[in-house]
Image 1 (spheres, rainbow, N blue to C red):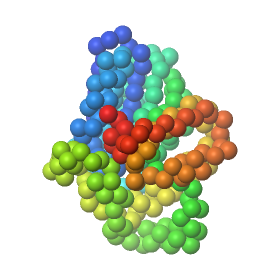
Image 2: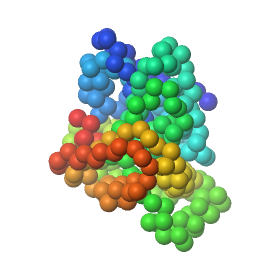
Image 3: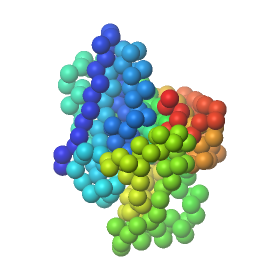
Image 4: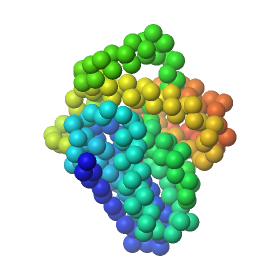
Length: 250
C-alpha cells in the first residue's frame, strides 16, 4: 500500500523531531496544521506527517480500515525510515489530534529511542465500560458480520470549528472526509480504547492533554476517568478558553 508522507525541515539548530498524527477524516494538508508546523520549525523542530491509509493522498478505501493496528504499523515504518537520518539520541515527540492521539499513544508504547512525550490535542478517550457492556458487545458482533455497514458520524464538522472560511475549506476539500464511518473501523476504535487503558501502567513519559473549553465533541470527565489512577507518568491538562477542537492548535 502506498502511503503519502510530508516533511518540514527546520532551518534552525535542531532541537528535536515532532511526528504529527492527523484525526480520522483529515490529511496532512489541512490548513489548521500550518500555523503549528510553522511555529515548530521556527523553534528548531523538524516536523513529519503521513496521510493515514484511506486518507488524503494515501491508498486505501476512504475512511476504512480492517485493523487499527494497521494505521499504527504504517506510521511506525515511516518513523523507522526517518530515524535512519538522525543520531539515536535525537529527541522526538508525538502529537496526535483527535483519534490520531490514539495512534500517538500506541507509538509511544512501541518506540523507546529518544522518545520524550506525547501531546494529545482534542483526543476522545473513555472507558469501554462507559458504553455499556451489552452495547459494546453488540457493536463488536455487528462489526464482524457487516464490517462496511454505515454506523453514522463520529461528529459533525461544525462541532470541530466555527470559522466559516475553515468550514468551507473542509467541505470543499475532496481529500477531507465528511461522510459516515463504517462499523468495522468504529469497532476497532472501541477496541483500541480498551487496549490503551490496559497498557497505561507501562507509560512513564509525559503527557500533555489539550482540550478547548468550548469543545462540544469532548466530555472532560471522560479523559480524567480514563487516566485516573493509571500509570506513573506526569500528565497535564490544559483547556484554552472558548476554543473548539481544531481551534486549540492556533
